[in-house]
Length: 308
Image (cartoon, rainbow, N blue to C red; front, side, top):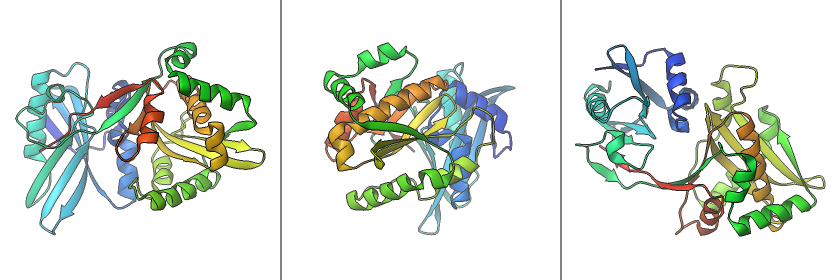
């Protein structure tokens, strides 16, 4: 088994990541975007002979000037045929070969609930896993709608009957900047941390221009001429992640976010997206948002945690 760090080979990475419906944080373009914003990124191709069995993307931070930490968030991404033994050996090899100088630490946060399947045996869990909600978009639309919880579905039906209109926003930064600005204000008011300002633009620039491949989906709900809600999703291979949401009082009363998320599910499904990640659920600090996500009928998945 060999780990090749920082190969310029993107095509095989993208193919493995797409087939696995890999997480946003392991998409090659995510690393390019973070590098554009000043973060050091390391990438590992893991081979057993000629076979590519996994890839791992790490963000690097220096602590106290002497300790370098590499975080493999929601990774590694494994080929379907990678065995448990191969995954264990690969994680040990990643720790041993990470190309950092001085005191170095490699943290792995698997994108799965089963730590054994992630290959973390022998590693120490240092942080418990977060929970997220994931929706499979593979069922037919009528089955997706039937899986919505009753109150959520009723809110959707009410929004569909209302005066709300939904518009798909273009991919030019000027066309969705209004939503980013509202989200930044919301972030400051509620004191939560998200990806840095400028990430969405850097994310788009990191994707090669290809017909039919749009890395961002942005939807806006209007009441008359006024925008009352918006949602932005990042598309990575055959998966997508809910990234930004904002709703004003008028939109909240009419169920605008129910309508936007449903329309997004249909639009992403048409693009060939198999899985939609709605992000973390925190029933203690964000009970309302957690209930909204869980009521979509998606799977509530508690990840294995962070391992050293």
